[in-house]
Image (tube, rainbow, N blue to C red; front, side, top):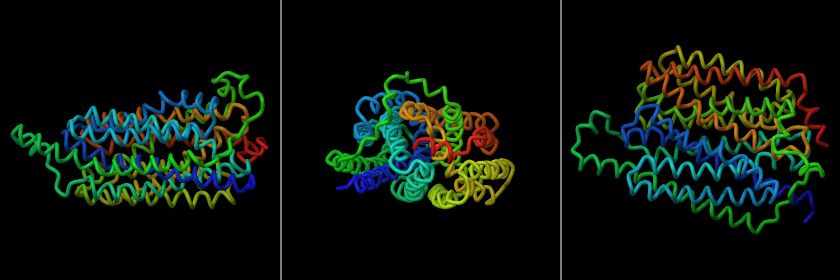
Length: 420
């Protein structure tokens, strides 16, 4: 097989991984209201689902980078898939023990796998092909993440959410025995979907194990500089800041979608899951449309325009009422869709031997998804108004706007071309 054909096969296999981690991430909007109902959680406590996931990105990103530098991209991907599958299987004992903490632990293990997987796969896509098309290529790969964002809420809503969940008052009025049986039934609903997902991930890992993936080597200077040498590059520093706030915004928008629809718009949970699916569809379409526009518009110019639109729509989410607020959230999902891959591609562009280190640092900044949603939940609990919590993603989009403006002087395409 020629090198070019081998690269195409490798790229196809790695792009498929974007779907799988997107799928498990986009089960969280279903899992949050489901566990909140089952365990009678506050908004802040429910937001710990996201915290358990995204804290792993902070803790595991640097070890993931070390694994890649020492063993290569393929080893990182295989280790990530293995941890991903183990975490999925841990949902079974978590449900059997009726323990919210156990669920958070299982999610943390899943996220450890995703951290290593994303630390390997994102830069792999940017360097596997024409450097001048790295941003466009990563946006295309991330489009399959968007496809998962559309499918996951549909399947999650069908197999996890109850038709008529009990209110906190109804649960409190139950006897201890009936309450335990109710919680057991609610938590058991998650076992099937996560077990099937774990089996699929193991099969994917087995396929990749026996597939030759080309490892992209940077120049000889890769091992000479320290891990944090990447911070000497301005675009890396801004990439870490921009990604921290963007991921915080994305998690706030997508993970709280079902809660927002039920509490602000008064929509039943099962129907609300459909709106989460619409947001996923918008997110997916935004990625494909954004990838197309990048043929004609510089990525950072597009990022600037999209950031301004998201800031404006966030004001409607905060101060609007009725169905227009839900549609504003869905539209935000469309316009924020290009942000992660664009920030990432710009953040690792033109830095040669520091690429793997920069990838770890930018992936580590995904911890914004752990830090900022609890702030949204805390503001909502303190004010008694979920909408006011959405000042958090609004401020995040302002930071993304600053990222795009700060890097605008360095044309993105010239940055990428410098890798050649």
